[in-house]
Each structure stands twice: as structure tokens, then as C-alpha cells.
Image (cartoon, rainbow, N blue to C red; front, side, top):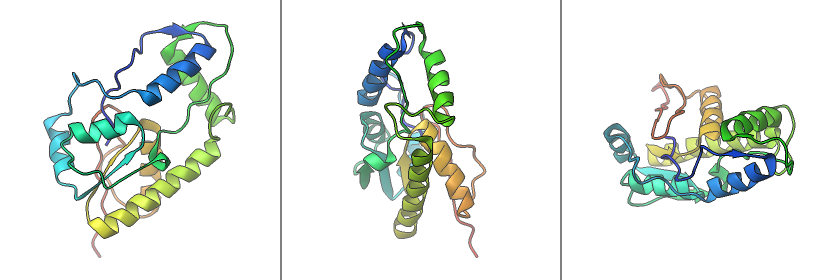
Length: 183
């Protein structure tokens, strides 16, 4: 499941250096308590025996908003894929433009102030393996994750033989269900 909407201003225009500061603020931000999870998200979360979060506030607070009483595991390993940034003072662009620019640059090899794309994909594979192991132990696992990481984890779970009729969650509070086919 993707975390809830972060409580941070996303309508700003900034330069690349200011974008780097914004990324740090985003990673420290909790969730906007006015944008509560859907009933469907709460119902899905309540069916899970074990919960996994990243160590970022928006993941942990989202689990609490979903009614999770005990987070079984939380780790830096499950954080969002890093966003590179630079110290440029020019130009001034919208936040959305910087997000697209730096995510594309990152996928093409630019990783200043961030883990490399290759390292992030390897971490996502490790996350998928860890979630699969936890599911074999606990039966059902709720992973309150992040946009880009969720997409890559879903891809690796499918490569490992997990099935899902859902697309990886893109919007806040969206979820996808993965299962192993009984043999």
C-alpha cells in the first residue's frame, strides 16, 4: 500500500538547490491528517497479520492511520528510492518539473546526493525477497511503502512467481494484493 498524502507544500517554484532542501523536508514530513485512508484501505490493512514500514514518518504514520496496532518491522531498507539533486541556483522551476527531471536523470545515471539507480533496484529486489519471507512466516503482510519502491518491489515479486491482478499503487492509500498460487 502506498502511504498517505504527506503534509508538505507541493505548489512551490524553486531552484535545484532549494529542491534538495525540499527533498529533505519531504523525507521528514508526516502525513496530512485531513486526507484519511479510504474504508477499503483500512479493511485491507485489517486483514494482514504482520505490518512492514519504512523508517520515514509518512510510512509509520500511515500505518497508524490505517489502525495498525503493532508494526512488526520497520527499516531504512524499505524507504523510498532516493531522489538526486544539485546545488544549481538557476533555473527556477515547478516542483513537478524538478521531480520529473531528476527522476529521469537518475534513471540515466545521475546520482549526486542519492544512491545509484542500480543500487536502488538491488535494494528493491532485497525488499521483495524480505516481504516474501515474511509472508511465508506470517501468512499476510501489509507493506506501507512508497511510490517508486512499490513499483519495483511489485516487479520483483512477479519475477519471483507472485501473482496480482492489480497495478502497483500510484495514488496515496492505493494498494495491490499479491499472492502465491496454490499448487
